[in-house]
Length: 161
Image (cartoon, rainbow, N blue to C red; front, side, top):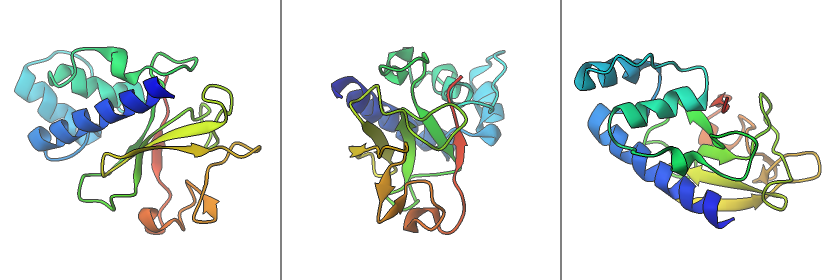
């Protein structure tokens, strides 16, 4: 649990610094600004968390991919919830691992039945994953739009490649 927790904290710091420079966390709209300010020729996409985190490298905020590692099958272990900023509800999840590819359920294997959640307030917590792969918070699934921090809208999740 030490590696994913520590890496989630590093991602949180990188996202905060990125927002300081570009006005928001990485999304499709920040790619052009990153390319313009850095002169980069990289194709910056938004289909996966890898694509969006790539803006952290191109901008010079991250020097290594190591912070995106955790004991999962992907080189980038963290799913990213798009469209958030530091002004959102502090309890809102912004990065999670180990989310199953293309699903809103977690893999119980990598971290002994626990999910690592990075929140907007930069806190990181490990929450239990139930037998069906869900993290239950406030009596409902973490991704349930009824969660107070989602304000009735389903989160936009980008999974790792």
